[in-house]
Length: 339
Image (cartoon, rainbow, N blue to C red; front, side, top):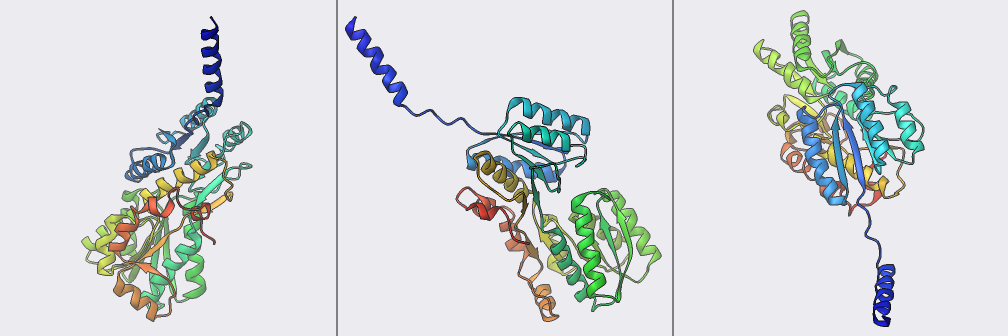
């Protein structure tokens, strides 16, 4: 009996002395959809980030439905996840749900959208400055004169509006002899970009360039211009691999690399750090790259532009070099750049 008692006491002592295994942090993410190639790539790299950071990420598609997105957020709150990431379908409509999550002690990250819901974090891009640089690239390439047009996303979207503002204001200030003959909201729909480009090329036979707040819109516009025998130059944003030929040929004078893979990894990296109690700025700005062919970059620099660039070979590497750029070995300061 004494032996059994001693054994029981010993086992209890061992149990008390053994540290509790840390529970795996769970991140809940609601995307607008998970069918678009951008989101597919985001998730692929986001899953790598979850593995690198030792967390579990649960991705849920709202399938374009605000009602469904709000339901997903409510479920995440009830599940007591350690952080919630939201790509808001409507930034104002999700604000009450965000406040509820924060009141429950759950950090919330709004992805690619500035949402002021009282304590949430926003993962953004240096969009104004970057599109200003795209405007300069087009302006210098045209020698400061000509007619151009701009394809945007949708009015009221933070990213689209900020990129549009950066481009338009920079062009007006620094290239007064360049006229923007059209700005067309497309809802990121390639078909609408195609229609807009066709209308512009018919109405403005002297059109020299089209700028786009997203690469897919430039691809659509170029397909129309090529079929109509028009030679335009372009400036874009995203750093999609599909832009390689246009960049290498000099047709696209500048692109901005955010990259779907990098965006996915970065957002999970930010949320994982918040789930661990790290202190980060409320607004975080993703490190980005300017992409041009070496020949185009030299011409732009000779014209007076000051910027660092990478070519498409380096772009292909950096687009998937997210673990080195943003992984757990990097300091918290690597999660954002100054503006």
